[in-house]
Image (cartoon, rainbow, N blue to C red; front, side):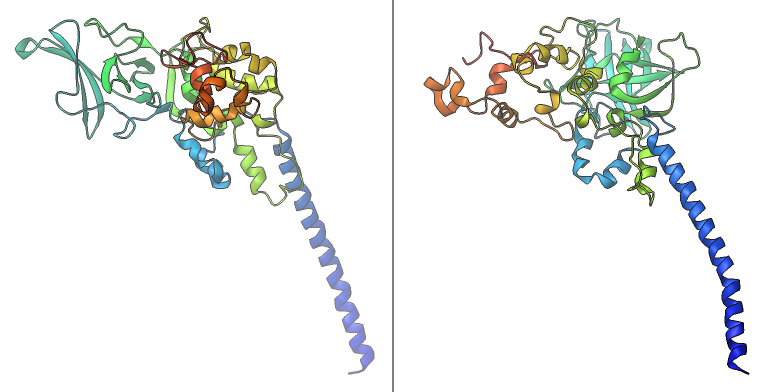
Length: 372
């Protein structure tokens, strides 16, 4: 076979290869363009409030943001949970599980077995005894100060008549009942405002005019990552895409990057009170944002809630929190420094944000009885 024939055949094979290669490159480029378009459309879509159909869950978030794992132990995250032996702090042991009332013929009993956890109202004893039992569906409250309990009646949730006090380490009448009355009944509805801050998502019932009608399916209990950062569905799809470095993701909210007013509004969603006077209510239902905004520390600086609070981990050390004050103030400027010296170190919070009822006042100022 001549060299001319070989060259001819090679040229023929090469000529037939090029169209196939070009076609492949065109298809590949089209696939990249389509994928890029999808990623861009998803990323350019604004943040969406979390709900059952677009939530990815904290475990997905923490799989990348491992430094935020301590958030799972915060009061925000634990503010509403399913009932377990670990979640409920009250004692179900015999004798410790009974709460008497003002009537010797009426008491409440808390029981636990393999089927769940229950509260029972018992009227009289013996043959004439009558009772009503409801199963605990949710535990409300992290337990730092106490816990209350909810049950379902059809598609309506109600608060149970017995709560738990951490300070007393005892069962008590549900707060705002003024103690436990023998007439305490099981018809206290759960207002929508409660769900806004004790759950990240709760689906309303089909009747738009009903204030206490919900669908338990898909409820997201407690405040999850997505309650403040928005749904992570599009964000996760973007980050897992090979093109995530090409398109900027706009589907997630980082409150740390918001302007001051928006940061404060984020916290005020739950710490803006229940419509009561913000003055000295002294618990987490008070308008803490309004109290803080009265403070000279707030008006004379650009501070926000997160200047002192790290929402991604439990914070209970007042000495540590007092150290945040020293980023702006000097201990020598305190009027008590001249007489007490270094003994005042770590006590800024105790003096200027004293305990009131069940929480600290967030109106940072000099109190008449402080420093005593």
